[in-house]
Amino acid sequence: MKILSVAIPCYNSEAYMERAIKSLLPGGEDLEIIIVNDGSKDNTQKIAEEYEKKYPTIVRVVNQENGGHGEAVNAGLRHAKGLYYKVVDSDDWVEEQALYKIIDKLKEFVESGEMIDMLISNYVYEKLELKKQKVIDYRSCLPVDKIFGWSEIGKFKSSQNILMHSVIYRTKMLRECGLQLPKHTFYVDNIFVYVPLPFVKKLYYMDVDFYRYYIGREDQSVNETVMMGRIDQQIRVTKIMIDSHDLTKVKCKQLRKYMVKYLVMMMTVSSVFLVKLNTEESIAKREELWNYLKKKNERLYREMNRYLLGWMMQRKNRTGRKIIVIGYHISKKIFGFN
Image 1 (cartoon, rainbow, N blue to C red):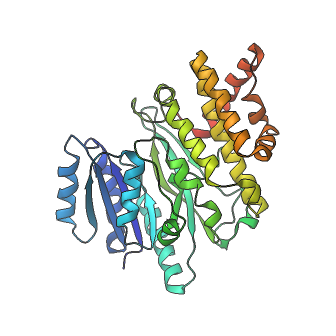
Image 2 (image 1 turned 60 degrees about the horizontal axis):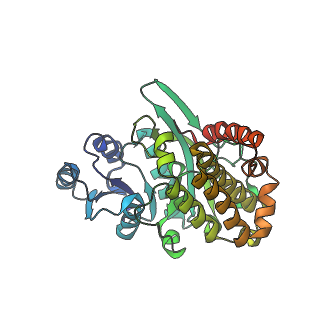
């Protein structure tokens, strides 16, 4: 029985995927590494199959036509045999000692019969060219080393959003909640971490620096120029998140507040880049996005306008544009891009 399945979505990843794979191999037979080759045109498939041949009981390769990051995550989930599921991007890696601790803790849950739905751990921004690291932890807002529910969470700081890097979900729960990421779309990691939240009943936070999130490639999806070029995909992801839940019906006050705040941040990022593009079309798209939210859920729209960021993102005059630039710097700090 595999305790943890880890999917590594790969597209033309020959230059860096081995670091991700090697960082996970110490997990041994408790771990299943699913390398999803998403229609790569380089040596990704060859490298993946070499590891599968060398570690046949640990590494599995899934080859598919190109469907984008989301479809690679979907494929990993479809093939996962582990009781828990995590995604590690091919240019990232994990820390060995933290991996041991997490697997041991998951085994404890399995052996005790008290299965949690989500395990949260710290992640580290790795800006190798600048030789800088920034650790994102949750000590101030989550109970440490205990099973808890949403009613026990505290206030999240602006930098403490729960991201794909920090979560491990129970595999069966992900399947039961009907999680399906769209094809050929970037930024779907937000959907991955957001949509299952109301289905999560038992959580556990381990204060270990597990995931190493690499920042620095020019073609990286969180690069500012790249994000502005893909703004339509950012908008699409934000709308999918709006459609996924009626937050006015989420019963737990703490969870609802967190999800509203997350959605405010998504609206902020989209609005900021649309304003920075500064075309008639982009300004119209910003207005359409907020009108989409208003039409979908006017009560939620009004609530989000009570947030400073939500209010700032809809200002239309010159002063409003300056305010939105300030909002950009806030969102940049929150999401850590560039």
